[in-house]
Amino acid sequence: MAQNKVKSRINIITIAMWLIVVFAGCKKAQQRNEIIDKNITSKDNLVIKTTQQLKEAFIDQRFGMFICYNIMSYGAKWGQAHYPIDSFNPEKLDCNQWAEAAVSAGMKFGLLTTKHHEGFCLWDSKYTDYDVASTPYGKDIVRQYVNAFRKKELGIGLYYSIWDSSNGIDKGSIDDDRLEFVKGQITELLTNYGKIDYFVMDGWYWRMGHKEIPYHEIRALIRKLQPDCLITDHTHLQAPFHMEIPYFEGPFGAFPSKGNTMASALGHCSVKGNGWFWSEETPTGLKGGDGVETILDKLITCESRYCNFMLNCMPNREGLLDPIYIDMLSEIGKKWNPDVSRPRLPNQGTQIIESIPIQSITATSGNSSYLYDACQVGTNHFHWESDIGFPQEIIIDLGAVKEDINTLLIVPNHRCKPAPEAALLEGNVINVKLSLSSDNLIFNEVASKEWQSNSKYRTIEFKKSKTRYLKLEILEANGDRAIIAELEVGRSEK
Image (tube, rainbow, N blue to C red; front, top):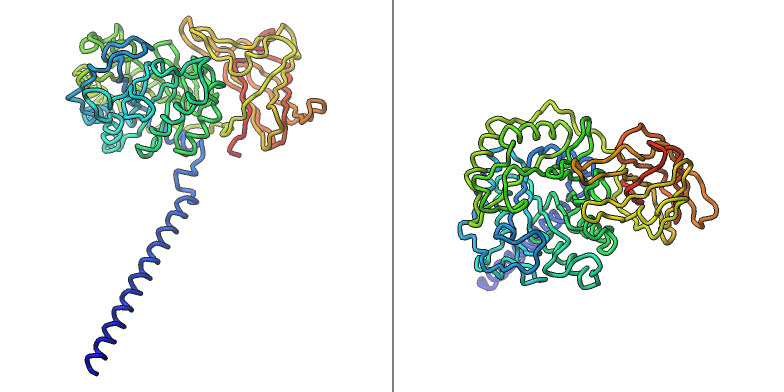
């Protein structure tokens, strides 16, 4: 009888302890869920930071390392398809060396060419065998870079070329399979390596435009995978058209103008190479008139103009930065300190968050097809130019009635070459009216805007509206005709 009582008591205690454990586990799970929910909805969480806040954080980084390392480092020509990769075996590759060199210079982020125009991937991509996994080296270099830079608390940037000569991703060849190829590779890069702060695309707008590989689909994918990731496309347009961070191509002479407050980035090459990549000239190949003092001058000027300065650093075929870089970066770090007196990044104004594809455009004069996604061929920009005289009228058709439209972006006239690459004053609009319609018959005016005479991009914001057609009436421009590079319609954060 006594034994039964003892057993009963033991059973009761056991059950009680089990219930306590279960209750505690449920409580912890509930707390974890509450924390997750809190993180999702908290205003301090990165997921819901505004574009302005993200740009401020990016511009506060000021100085970054543009790591141009890919198959061109081993002799491939620019855009060369199927260059042999059996020589790719950087046995001494050390991304920690890169990160330490970046820190020595005072850099705050990196940007690695995960894939250039030749199509060779520095990670094991399931979409192609033309990647590092198929080389004698075999190891994931993107992973090593991310780990090394994150260990040093440096921001993570990834560069990815849409144009891929080895896998047939090019203008006029895009079908569903090739579009899935691009989306799949972007997904790999943005899901396998943790938080990515900055994603740069190239070989897209200037090579094939943003229609065949639709901008709005790519941007939505990136935002879904990495909500706080800012993007750049090398459009050679100095405006936030289809991106958040416009890019200045240093070798083309592009440079932010005095008084610039547009959050932007600039890439600069100080050392000779195979284009942006390492060659036999690199170890002793400082470009004429360049060096530490030149870099410091450009860095300080860019910093004052809210433009992050990205210095190209080319790892050699062993996967290491040559002494020319190690010494130069160390000297820069000893001579440069961030200008903490620089005012906070000015308000960047309205930013289109969701771009709505334009289906067609008509205009009272000029080639209206140049008003959207005309892109660039070689060094030629194709812009819309009106006939002489005003007013001029442009009607944009979105193809169907869209809701919550509230922003129109106007990109001004640009020059690519001869250098310097620049936005131009000539033809930029300075007085316009904007009206909306659902049927292309009855238009209601929603905005009128005037700007100073300059070469800056124009943004027209209006009350969220349901519309299909937008009519832009140009009443005045710089000069006797209007010139527009691109138009973008969409929804802003407000």
